[in-house]
Structure formats: C-alpha cells, structure tokens
Image (cartoon, rainbow, N blue to C red; front, side, top):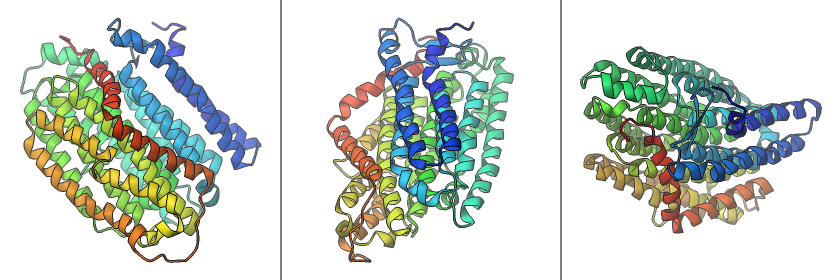
Length: 500
C-alpha cells in the first residue's frame, strides 16, 4: 500500500522531473541560455542530495541484511544498492553533459532550453529503469527514457541529417519498444504476474526445463533492450544517428542510453530469474550476440573517417564487452560477474564523456568532425589533447589505464564461468580497437597541424575533460576500492531470488 514515506524513496526521481519542468519555465520567460543552464546545473544538487542521503540512510539497512531492499508504491519501486549505484551514475552523466555542452548547444542547437529539459526528463526515465521491479513500470520508464532522445536527435540547426536521424530513431525505437512489450507479455502469460520476484518464483516452481516460452520471451526482451544498448543485429540506428544528431546529444546517447539499457536488462534477467531454465541455450544466444557486437563494432570502426561514426561503432564494440559480462552474470550464481559489469559501465561512462568532451571542443573551435581535423591538435590545444588521448587509450584498454583494469575484471569473470573462447575473441577484438583509437592519438601528436593557431576551450569543456581524466587516474589506482563499492550493488540483484 502507499505510504507518505514512499515519497522520500521517490525523491531523487521526483525532484529531477520537477527540475526539468522548472528548466522549461525558466527558458520560456528568460531567453538567456546561460540562466537556463545555471538553473539546470545547480538544480541537480537537489536530486543528487536525495540520492546520497539514501545511500547513507537506506544503504546500511540493505548492507546489514536488515532488508534486501525497500519497496514502495505497491512493490513496483525498489530502492536497493543497485538502484542507488545507477542513480548516482545517471546524475553524474547529467551534470557532466550540462557542463560540457553549454557552448556547443548555444552555437549549433535550435532550442537550448528544450534540449536540457529533454535531457533531464530522459535521465529521470533512466533512474526509474534502474529502480523498478515490475514489467509495466519498466516499460513506461523505457518510453520516458527514449522519447526525449528522439527529439534531441533532431535539434541541430543546420543540415537535413539531424531531421533524418530523428525520424530513423523514432521508427526503429517504436519497433524495439513493441518487441520488448511482446516479450513482457509472454512472461506475464506464462507466470501470471508482472512482478520480477514473482516471475522468478513462478519459473522456479512451475516451469519445466526445456519450456520454449521462457526462452522466446528472453530473446524478445534481449532484442528490445538490444536496440537501447546498440547490440548487433539491433545496432543499425547508431552510426547514422550518432553522425546526424548534435554532438552533445550523441555524447548523451552513447553513455546514458547504454547504461540505462544494461541497468534494466540486468535486473530483469537476474532478479526475474530468467536463467533458471534453458540456461545453456540462453548463454549461447547471449554469447553469440556479444561476439557479433564486439567484432562488427571494432572492425567497422577501424575504417571510419568521421569521428562521430567511429565513436558510434566504438560504442557498439564496448557494448559487446559488457554483454560478455552479462552472459557471465546470468550464468553464475554469485555476484562477481555483475560487479565487473557495473565497474566496466562506470569506467565506460567516465571515459566516453571525456572523449566526447574533446570531440565537442574540436567541433566548437573548428566545426570539424573528421579524424583528419585532429591533426596536430597537441600543438594547438595541449591540455585538451592530453585529456582526450587518455580517454581514448582507456577505451582501447591500454595498460595501465582504468579501461585496461575494467577489461581485466570483466575478462576474468567471464573466464571464471568457463567461457574461454569468448575471452579469446574479446582479446583479439581489443587488439583491433588499438588501430582506430591509436589513429586519432597519432593524428593529434605526430601529424602536422592544419593551422598554426591556439584553440581555446570553454570553462565547462575544460572542467569536464579535467574531471574525467582525474576520475580515470583515481580509478586506475583505486580499482579494488571501486569494485568493493560495486559489489553490494551487484549482490542486491540476487537478494530477491527464491532460495537466497
């Protein structure tokens, strides 16, 4: 039943939605982007404050096993350490994106105020995706996350590519939404409930191994979320939309959308107990998707000339590595693989935000989006180049960067589940990724500059790149500490399973 205390548990999401509406009102009456951006950035302190307070007030109850998690709104909303982990990640994404995109949005985006309001509404949906334990609520959160993204893709001032990207995004998004809903409908028809814990209990007690309906529902759910995380063969939207959308929107798609998709997918499959039957078939399907995703992403990225298309295929490849960890998470009966996945997602988010801050800075200064536009950038903007290079090398997994540590953790977890062939393929793909990440670093440091001038970057962009670089350095030296923080979040996924 509903209680007033439930509103406190909902406070981060509720305050963020109110902030988005406030941003819209401010933009309506005050036609200055700097004021709108300031309200959005400063206003994030409120949901972040609520999220951090829950870590200290609710977190100990969960950590001490007093409660596996605190449910609200008739059990549809859950506040556990997993939800709190992703709430902070999503709010961090929002803060860095607002900070790094201000100058770009003012220069290239049609409606700056609406851009930030849409971003905040989408982040609200992402936070709900990580915090819901009921299928219909997950679906509504999925739509709240997606619909603002469709509009953001079409907000570029110049060119028809942005409008084309938005139309493609809407059409393919509607298809993925229908597929996901059909998978949920099959689960409901089979178990008679939309609650994930009830589904897990029903599958354990009443579904025989070999029942094809659970496997079909799982595949349909994988396909629905596969669009959100740009997994092969559901990746076709990513390259065109990354290239056609405003660069700031592309950066947001690459981290927010992917992290939200994995947050929901992990909860549905692990808390929903979909691996309790037909496990071998399910792991085989997930592993094949992982191989196709990382291989296509890396090999096609290696031949791109547009840096945004290259980063699109790079994000596809990174999704492949996370899907490997997801396969190990579903396969295993402990939280080690899930902890490695959460650690990888955190590092990927920070690294990609830093890399895109460098791309946005270059687009601001020169309007260029080609890899050749990075030539000699180290001489024109030394600090920008250093931060961007660190993020790109981390994405490639070059030792001793945080990206290397995150890959090491996830490869070790997958190896521990006996998926040796998957690790070997991933290692080969990691070597391939050095080609295209290294090409940009080589262009920045070893090629002659296009112009003999000095590029200046805005305070917001400089701060974003500095924060991302500093965070990567800290994580590199404190990886075990960060993994220990991720471990309780991963454990909370398993807490509601029957028999635990």
